[in-house]
Length: 492
Image (cartoon, rainbow, N blue to C red):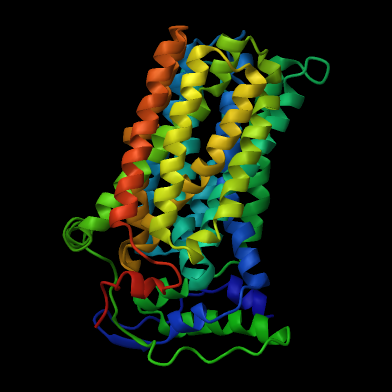
């Protein structure tokens, strides 16, 4: 019964105290002192699936290039880049719009709305009839995923204990590559003429994403609203019920919980919303250093990842003659290295520290990208060697990219956390992510290895700058409560 009560938290108009009322609460201390248990695993699976779905979408878009370039779609290489950018523009739009709503009306409502939009739009992509309809549905799919990033990142940050927040966040963001691997398998199976007509195989691949989204939609009914969000918006009694239900999960399993840390009470003044003027002041005045760091990290990783991964299928086909139906085999090891990076390096972000690990992962990624790009330009590596080299590069780059989301999620106050994630995601993706695929698509289309190397060097330079900025000005948030890392705007 405790599980059901948590899942239904907020469903029956909970009692709310008036705006301006001061609440004394130990909600944060109670959440942070919990051991990592089955409840947190449920949160990770039900909410972290967002990155799996994003990885699935991105990989399918890249691996299905061969099928989309044939009749009846007959996409050009520019069309492929345009479709990739449409998805990213949608993600930017969804992140900003849904991010604002997430801070205003709650985390739980939004992670249902955004997932529903995603599953309908990705299924509709499988029904596309030309480049215009395909780009429209990709835009809507991206909007759902962009909204997911803001609602889910903020929820996970607020439910996971401080001492494992770094590793958990990196692994969840790294699960993008589980979706990438799934997308690779689907592309391998569904582009084989002996399995299914390739003209229909790419359509079925998008239907699969919608089916997965539907299953997760049902699983999320058991996840509660963020108690931190509830108490800040005046739902103190409801927040207490949610946390009590979570604690009961552990005591029912025979676990004795330690008392909350003494002196960890917060006094918060209830607010219905945060004015945009206060949001701007928090981001560009009070927390301007964190804003600089967040922008540097997000822009660099967005360009690096989206430029290279969205166009890797084009590189394999044009420069190595790899058939479209075989591209998935090369994306699998690529995905494996990228998932192992956050899993194996993530714990170091909680022990060695945020700043040194951000500097190390971004810096190593920059050096390796430049080196592999130079080998590509010389034509030394074949398709297998090129893929093995990218596997090593993305082992470090994946941890770096995941740490960007961790940084912007934990270094801004609760009241603007989702909107801050949205703003950085939007700016990073808008500047680095949208321009990357278009630039690389054009460079690959020239057929010149020298021009493609220029693109790789641009990505390496951005990662190097981010390494310096993150290492010098990042926040040492390891092991600290979110409220200690960034004081709530509602503190009384």
